[in-house]
Image (tube, rainbow, N blue to C red):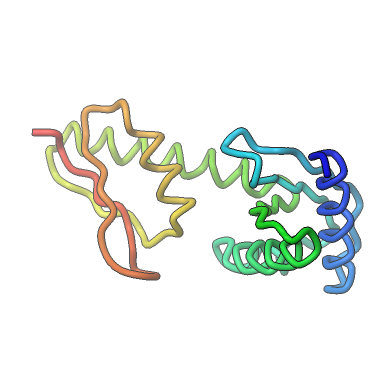
Length: 155
């Protein structure tokens, strides 16, 4: 099976599942992500996205895992499904990037380390990448749901 056929099955599966959850899909697309062939982004537009996204994207993370498992059962192959509802992921990435850069700048100016709020691994990765070239150190600390980033001066 080629990627086009695989992606059509994934898109159909996602739309069917969301409709069973009482979310009519207005628009939908699927695209392969550059990180590897076993990862796709499915973007959907729905009338009421808040129930799908949940507080700080927690529902979205759970739905993605379930979708990935359903797709695995259909394809007999693991494909990580990243779900973007009404552009939430892009907005989240921009917001986290701005926040990380702002805090890193503050750390550079004051020399005082700053702890960010607890975040998912996806969110932490965005922050680490956003400030990687700045003259600060970012480290993940804590365990489980309490895992967060600490930004420290380089020296």
